[in-house]
Length: 355
Image (cartoon, rainbow, N blue to C red):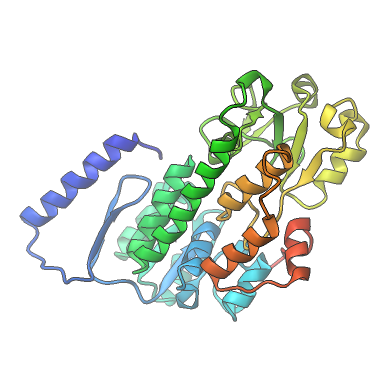
């Protein structure tokens, strides 16, 4: 569920005032009140000790904020991310009390979680929310449709788990990257911007308007060809046909699934496209998660990488390997060697094929 940004915040402040006016509970200095992406207000007396992450994105955020060791429940997607195994030893042993947005409440209760982080799709299923409400389990829904909303969710998650300043450190970097890139591409006329096609997981799945993928690719100073087009929707996924892609004739194609770049380059149906003819089909890096994926955390790195690929002359001075080293050291306390950096940039071997 998505509600107007200003309306959501107005409701939030009214809720805070009412809680102070009518609640008989006195909270200590560690208490926190935040609003999730559905507009639900969550108040906790103290940071949770045991954290259930039923959305991979939330597990990445919790780990970045140095609470990964306190996760007591995860989803299978987190077990596929190889860097998480370094950061959260034993993650493969954690229970998985949710699959496909459906919660196994008995398994979740056994974890004794103090907070449950949910994906937005789960929050739309009334029966799943009722399971949590029946047992008075505090929960926070982490949905977003833009970079600004993603940053807000990360900051609010930081407040919930007692890592507010570390979350703000990350969003300051995020905003700095956006500014750095936009300041270099702002002068490019709209009709001169590079036509870019973004493949999400599979060749024909792409970006719809009002999504974070559209927001961050546009921040790179490109014309994302699928924005404003008529796409075929299947659930929360959107697809384009080859005929439409041929008409768009993108100059650059970026893909976020290992091997899809080669599928496109070797498929005769795609051969008339300029990006294919010019061999400008690139596989997006994968680190903690897929860079720039709808549920990914490394959006700032995706912006830098894409801008440098699309406009190499404007970003010659950007040392991407240096950016990677600083990013993972600063936010994950990970020191990467050259071989691992090459694997991240090459989108090779960073995710297990199964949990």
